[in-house]
Image (cartoon, rainbow, N blue to C red; front, side, top):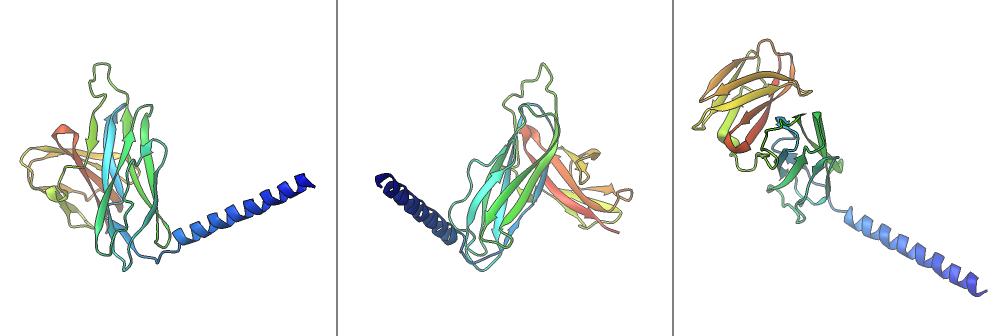
Length: 231
């Protein structure tokens, strides 16, 4: 009889814990919906040597009428998000978080996904970063080399018109020559050039679709923007 009573108490306690967990979950996910946007959703980090790290700073914008609450931000295998905003983001305000991709043990084409869960509809939003990892040369000293867009002003270069038809204009305001690479939607490099100021690129042979343009600077910093070819 005593064993039966103990088992009954354990079952009741389990129901209470489950009920409490459900209540907490319902409270956590019962916030009014708002709308989210990003300055960019996909980043092409180009080609890096195995062992290098890529740090990408994403900007989150609350374009709705209610505070934006991030319940979780999680990267896929090899991509980590060590810190993400815990405080509500008020309407018309923005914040940032950093994702880090460590190429140690990776080789070849890479595609990583970041999932943000928030009080939006749908609840999950997705960001991505992709590029290529090549074998590190034996004399390479880039073990702790980090590529990042963290300290580069977004307005350092712009592309227009967007969508483009036959010509893409690059307006570059930097002081030093920089390398630009253009990738198609599946990560194939289709152009490699240098830019010192403004430049026009003939895209008449590009097929309709979404492209990424990566501009690299001294010290490992870079900027990535997207443009569309539409005819």
